[in-house]
Image (cartoon, rainbow, N blue to C red; front, side, top):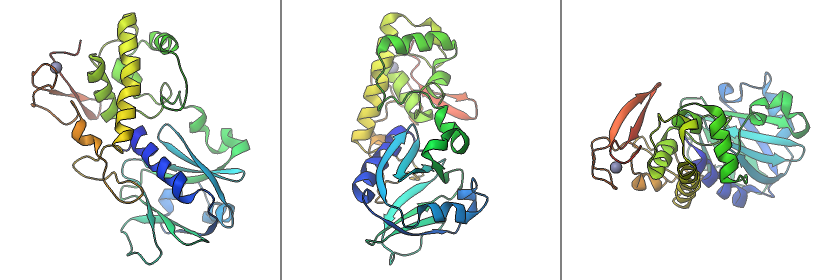
Length: 277
Ligand SMILES: [Zn+2]
């Protein structure tokens, strides 16, 4: 599932590629992706003829500013947003196509359709996009001091991995980056969040910023399924820098002990039994 670094990579390129462009037509061929709108015309009529001002991001959500509305895109498990030309070959599982008056297209492709595309009025977010208002701080966009971060951890009293992946606490971190952040901080995922020393809080705080920034620099992670693609259809590069994720049995790069995989809810979590405490 795309997490903050993948979505930020798309946001950055999208801003450069489509800001200032006017939307000519919006074609919806997969109604599950626009399920929030009872009537497809409610989406297309609000976008057609409008100009894209800028592209922002909150956690894993892309927020495309279109006049008084946000065009919200959440990639879910397998969503892709691709810049194409109208003459390009059809792509399987394309659900929404936005064509610009200046030429060029954006195609929203999503084989598993857990993702979503919808429009919400900026002045009516509470009703049209309530989940965005519930998101916690964005670790790249929002400024937070390490001691404010520490007191939030203290209040949660949950396992660290569960806290890091709770979108209402911090927005944008999922299964991959929480494992990488915890390894970088030298902390176990099952440590209670209120058990950290001051030094450990600072280490974790620093690891959150550093791991996400490094991943953004390398344009995110594409796993073996290569489902994550950037705006131009290219894979990311950070998967080659992972220290624990999907490295079960391989020696830890810090202490040489084999990386362990444990079941964590419906997923797997990877960590080093030697140097994460
Ligand atoms: Zn280790």
